[in-house]
Length: 182
Image 1 (tube, rainbow, N blue to C red):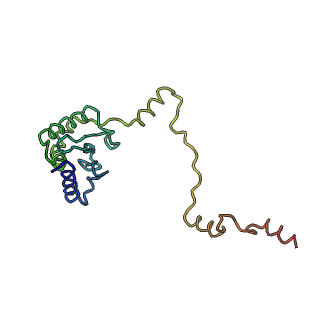
Image 2: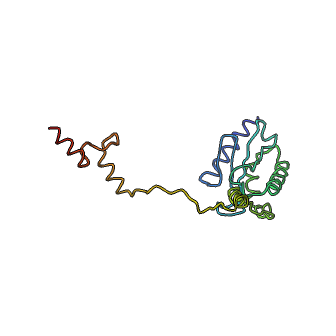
Image 3: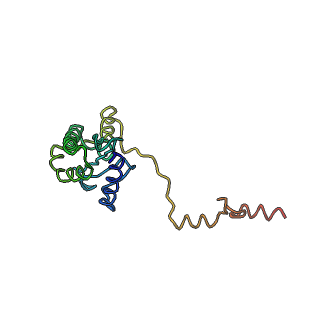
């Protein structure tokens, strides 16, 4: 079998195995994402795996660069990738996507044991802003426009024509001007 035929067979297998699974996402015929853990789980991470042209004879590209993984420190990411690459080496030459995903699910606790959530860049910015300028107050907020309720919006749209303009004579000043012309 050629590498392309192996890829097509593995793609079919993955689609049938993970059909309806919210954790699996096919980005393209050669690129996949799989979320290990629940969305609310602080130790969850998103595997991003891409196949080169000669996969499965060559190793797939494994990445943890997705936005979902921003809270994971770089050392833990390196550890996860290193351990996954060990699994890739053991399975080189065979279809290994399912094996990698299942291995990562089974070993999630071990992979994330040293995980300490990274602070958000947004949090760091606001605290550094206060350190730079002690007079800076986060209580200063822009005034919001008054929001209309649904019924107010319906009444307003009922008064306007198809161009969004109010019809002539909608207020008494226009009515008086209109009557005084005759």
